[in-house]
Image 1 (cartoon, rainbow, N blue to C red):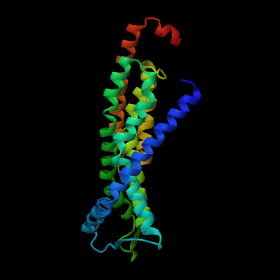
Image 2 (cartoon, helix red, strand yellow; image 1 turned 90 degrees about the vertical axis):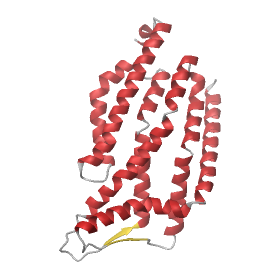
Image 3 (tube, rainbow, N blue to C red; image 1 turned 135 degrees about the vertical axis):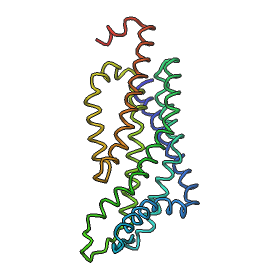
Image 4 (cartoon, rainbow, N blue to C red; image 1 turned 90 degrees about the horizontal axis):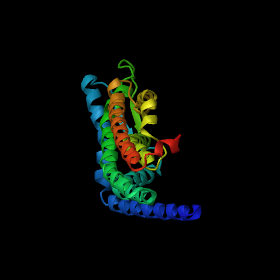
Amino acid sequence: MTLFEHLAELRYRLVVAVLWIVLAMIVCALFYGRLYDVLLQPFVSASEALMARRPNAEIQAVNIGVTAPPILALKIVGVAGLIAAAPLWLYQLWAFLAPGLLAKEKKWALLFLAAATPLFLSGVAVGYWVLPKGIEVMLGFTPESVPVANLLDLQYFLTFLIRLMLVFGLAFLLPVVIVTLNLVGVVKARQLASARPFIIFGVFIFGAVATPSTDPFSMLALALPMTVLYGIAEVICRINDKARRRRDPDADLLDL
């Protein structure tokens, strides 16, 4: 395929992925009330946990502005559609990359990309799970002796929650990205092995920055799975490189 044909294929895959996401958004809009309750639950859990320790604490979620409710509804439905359509737009990514792979590499990639959807959804679930502890820690900075009520902007909170869930979901796709780059010949297993200490260090830094709370458990909830997934991806890349060398003994010389 020429460059323009690749660009045309990319445009087609993007259009199909967007159409699936829009369709999923329309379906999710029918359950908007339930989605609203689910996304608000981390705030409710954090408030109850904080008030159990500090009964005098005043915590309330508020909507600020006339346009806040409809904008919030669009954000909730949009992200719900993105998550619900994850298997479909991930397949479009696979369909765009597949023509450049050999038949045996396609089998590996298809098997591993089949794990992309549960990995993405698992990351979203972990992000949703760690947020209540972060909220409790941050709201706890208000001294108990000070007569100050914590008014939480609901739009800001749900935007922050959605962003955190997507960050966790995309972070859990790390092995899919690594194996895909290996299959198309961009990275080798030996390069991954040499970069492993720096990658792991960067993963923990990313975990500390991406999680909202100051406790180490939230950071580890993101960093440890990413480290394990990186190790699994490295093993798969090593197996693929060995298979590639068996097919073409001169592959290493060509790389050098």
